[in-house]
Length: 196
Image (tube, rainbow, N blue to C red; front, side):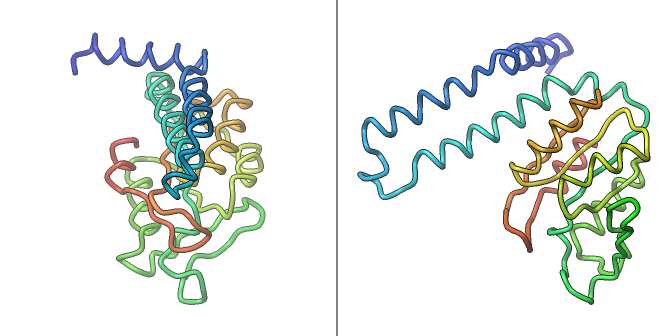
């Protein structure tokens, strides 16, 4: 895309985000799914699937509308989900610091997603935090001053993190998990690299 088209689409995303157009479309789609009893007909939970799509669109619209502000930031944090560690037991050598509320990656396994993401973030100048949940972000932001942040999480945690960043005036970028759950979650390192 040229600079003109990028700025056009960022402005379009910003306006769509301000007016919550994607939310309105999602509400209409869920109403139609209920009206035509698509769940009963297909056996699929269509309203939940539509909500998931709406949440993903919300993330991408917010990313696009915040990207220019984010690119201007100098000090940045990377928030990673602890549930994407290869091991969730004693084999993981990450240490938890309750004063910061974050795990510090021990770089114990070369094929660990968190190890690779931590190295990537550190190489690009980010302070990296491996979090047990989004509720740790306010505590970290009280102790360390950042202008921007990238967060990787499930939809619920991304919403929480976005609220915290907005209240602190930080520019943010979000990366949704590809596989959710409380363990063995997964996200795209390629998407992370592009976002950082």
